[in-house]
Length: 459
Image (cartoon, rainbow, N blue to C red; front, side, top):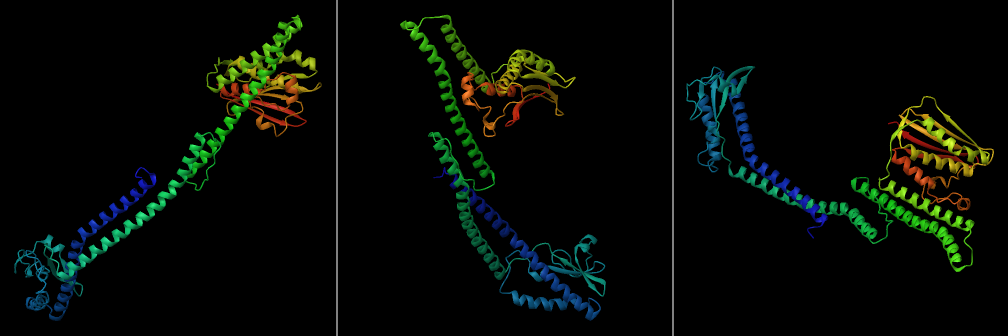
């Protein structure tokens, strides 16, 4: 039970509250007696100051003040004779003496200043002045040793201590209740995340937990939900890719197996035409295996790039030359529009030729006769070079655009099968561009054509 986070948080709240309460009680208890002593001394001094001011105003001098105060002290002694302070402490009426304005002692301070003695200026400056009609006529001297506490004052401190104990107990109870509530509130979403993680480990990959707050735990829950969706999507993509690979392999293997079996049984003769069909299917298998290997290397970061300075204009002209004959046969105009004096950028020229070749081949496949394909290159202000392949084909439907770079995805499945496409060309193109630190995007409108944009950093 003590290993539970809820109990740990509860005990932490309880320990903090208990420690704070004990420290507060100790500080108050240790300082209360001294504060009470200073309060009593200040009260007595203020009383004495008022009495001395009244006496001087009435008599005009300090003559006879000792007898006056002795009478007052006698009354005080009678009031306190049953409440004697502890041995070794002065009685409160012996805490004060009086000196005139020149520092001559009028009322002695026992053990410190006797009658007729002269008080040093520094001690006189620390005393409490007696002011009559704007003039200082005397100074009250205060002994350094504080008085003891009488039973009433001691009882007051005891009641204060009891109140602190009760307040501490109440604070601990409140801390315990609040700690339990906060601990359960904090750990409830964590328990939900733990349960969802166990379900994912059991094979149920798409899990969603309720985000109940906007704090760090809420951010954790939101991140968990995103992770769960991505894991489920990746798992579904893996299953789909496995099924697609099996489908792609089945057709050429079936063709090859059928021809070879028929030739073995003597049903068909091994003519050059039939051997050519078998060889073309083998080439198809080799292309598929090569494409899968390229994607695997890109996924693991092992795709090797031979980076060297590449001129954008020259690169596009090479692509144009490679596809000029095929474009002419289809009646499609293939041109290059590149800015002059474009800066060279670092890239693997062979890999980029593969990317652009794939994009141009797709454009030629879907652009009708009389259409055009334009290869473009521009330099952007953020130190990037953009290579574009724009065609006037039928365009890509909006519902297909988000998936156009997915593996084995075919927007036109019927025509893709006829042309022997594997559905990996655009996925490979994007992987190669991203391996260069760039991006590959597409903008398309139905009936108006498509534009593929390769954006690469200048190196």
